[in-house]
Image (cartoon, rainbow, N blue to C red; front, top):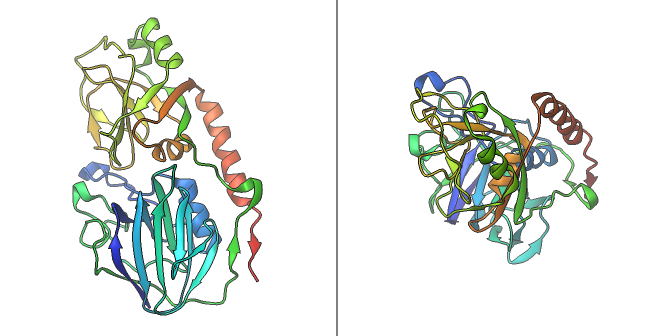
Length: 311
């Protein structure tokens, strides 16, 4: 069982939950930028939480089924069609051998997730399928998908076709409010710069990618410019010499020496990853304790999603 890539679109890459425990080797985590969209995709397909999917940036993906499949697309709203007939996002659909499926970008959002029942069968690199093109690791030969690529799948077992609807459907916006956990270097910034950072919107620039989002707005002055390189966490907000914040994402480098004002709360990174250049972000502070509580609430949200079976 397999699907064939006819057109790969702007950037289509294979991702599972991520590559963990290898920072000592200089290997970054990878994984889906919009984690909740990825998790819901696999939940609707009754997959394991680590099943490999295709992360599609700005649409343009066209595939053909070489056998029967059950598929689902979540994340940014796209024009999803099977044999040129529109079908819904956040819903499972059957592909029959020879069917064509296309994803075209909508008006908002960047990243969508295409999954198949039982996931794609891809060889693991350091325990993960996740593609990090900068490191030439994961996916098919460490690179993005290309026309003619064949992705093998496991056979479909008997499982329900599910969909998500109503108020549970996530909404993709063209702006985001990001919650920040202050870091240990927070007090190295002046109160004026901290107040400015948390009270003024920033714009997403076109120099943003899976490594990090570069922002444009009031510069933040650096007080301590002589820092040793150290490990970098997901969501770290680096302040380089020009004072323009960089929010580091899944494909970030494993060490760095820029000052960090804090880290964006992990669950808000999915909102950030759906923003396009020119969209805006604003920041607010939360405590570590609040972040822990919000993560527990999100686990409850994912676990209690009410799906509807398609008959």
